[in-house]
Length: 255
Image 1: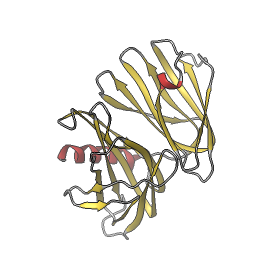
Image 2: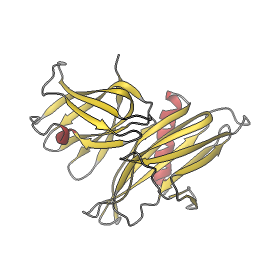
Image 3: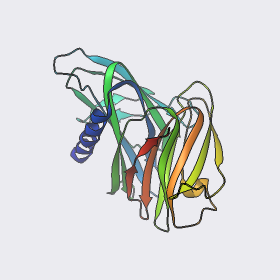
């Protein structure tokens, strides 16, 4: 638990440096067990970067599944006390305060989705993904990600080798379905394969590896993947290595 909290503290530092907002997104939430015995949990931190003694920020973290429906998921705080077992977590954070929430990783099959964080005053937030092997017997890896804004044009680093693969999560938090176009560019900025379009349901979510989206892509490949959409979407990117170890990749806004 302490290691998770330290990871959340580090990613919060990045989020505070970026900006505090009244609305932002965590484009990937993972909780549960894969058939292989690999387990995933997600930690979330919300902080109020305002000066100590300033008014309390009141808000809600709302969870949705791939199809856009609300997602009932259980969380505990840093003291292992239950904080929610429905589709949302209410929070209150005064200036200088921080709240931590960790999914319980119950025995259910792995489920994924995303979270929307809304607040009456500006707050900052981030998430940490923790992966365990052998039904939770040991930790494989963890990585922290800052919050995301919803944009119509953005880009991620795309890598595909025999040992590495970029993974991307996309959330469409708007009230209408999004048509999203993915275009791979090599290091010279030249398209290497045909662009792929995907439809994401209103309030929906999807996640995939570059190798899944572009199965004919030669290996090794190093470049970028441009993501353009009909309505704003929030994006997150991770780089996975063979054996399950993974790290955060940046998301860049496009002009």
